[in-house]
Length: 204
Image (cartoon, rainbow, N blue to C red; front, top):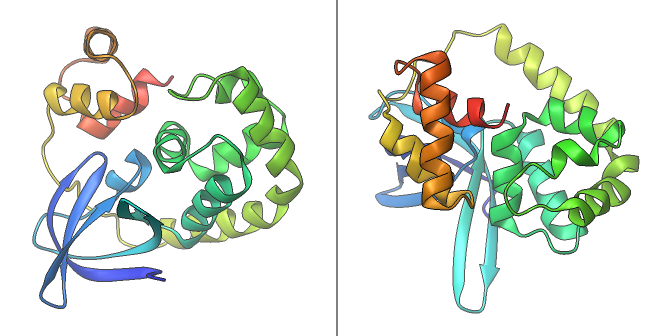
């Protein structure tokens, strides 16, 4: 099982990163909350990873923190009806700290706002994971404190509203819905946001 990848960041979008390591280029699926922490293209990066193998495909999912990776694995392994794509969408909408708090408060309404997650699935997530949140609360707090003490990471690239629309479509939005959501964000907050900021603002 591949649990970590370290190498040079070749290219990144809000939902993926291509990393050169050992003479190979790895395509890694990532949530928006990880994309916003990536360095500039060409710089070294390290991601905690979880590999998903199926009969007809294999995919690598990467996260900035180890606790994010472990939460992702827990969700797709323990919650019926939630696969990697929906889990990535969920973790793009909310940080791990917010997810922990939302699950502990049993806020199924907030979880259900994620594309691909309806009311029943949101309730199932809470039932299956609520008792497991204490250990993640400690890990997430420790990693957050450690990150805040380090040197801030520069944005990995200048993004556009078109990138944000495409990313929302990848998260499950219909094209018209994605465009409308981004247009509302630009009207409210202006056009100079990063792609990641635009996407997160649509979840507000």
